[in-house]
Image 1: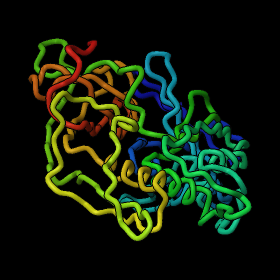
Image 2: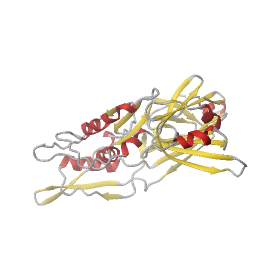
Image 3: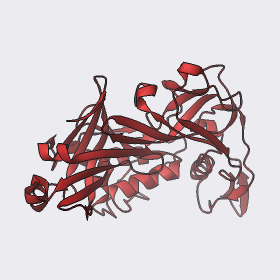
Image 4: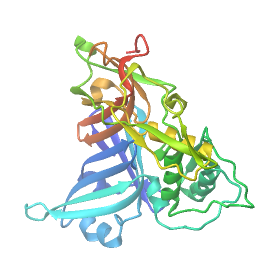
Length: 372
């Protein structure tokens, strides 16, 4: 374990089953960075400084201890409460001579467990009579040795398929195909580590914009303030109003976009309207497929974003990505509930800092207050 003031960082490694990293690895550890973000895989990076006589140089590197596909689990414990920050394979290692005699730096970069899902191309594998959510559950069964438990939510618009007429076939790796199915439905597919060591959740469904709210990010409220920085941006070009058509006989009939609240419950009382429109390719699709395409097009992005940073010792607990959080103290236009799009954890000896990005659909909160 590497002591980080009130924080303890535990590093576990192994081929599939993991065990605590050797003492030489822990002693050489300079810090760790972990990123969780919407629209991309989670990733981690470990930085180690060692001498040419260290076991890292004499035995661990030659034996392949840090080779790609080695599983790494990072657990940070703050005031006795553990949090699994990363679980997945090493994808890259970089060794650099620091310029000091006999000293080297090793940087190990990896991904979440979905990195194991993006290895074998299974194009053509059939899923007869199975809707997309069932296809994802079937694919995830292969990753039970990595503690993967699938959580899937059926799409609100799903065309009926006759297995006698057509059979869905996989396109690409499990990760690529599950991501494609999610994008087509306006959903997300990602893997989150935890809540216990060795366990992972593969989520296929809409963004989670309901449920528990994390403690508020507070600005300009004396001792209650818990941020180092916070800034806001509104981009009218971030979203577009989609429209499409369905073929009825020889005619193309316009189809209005469904209410986006089906996938993304609004977080503001005054949504920022898109400044442009976009015609989506819906030719040859049935009505449920057109509605699903339009719904996915509407939920692609948020026009209002916030970026900031903080020291975890002030906030009191790790900020989680892909969930709701309150903001207060910045004024009526920006106070209220936000969706956490990304969080980057930076752990060093004596510190644990986080950089984050928030998002929502517009100005003025649709709730009267948020909990501190």
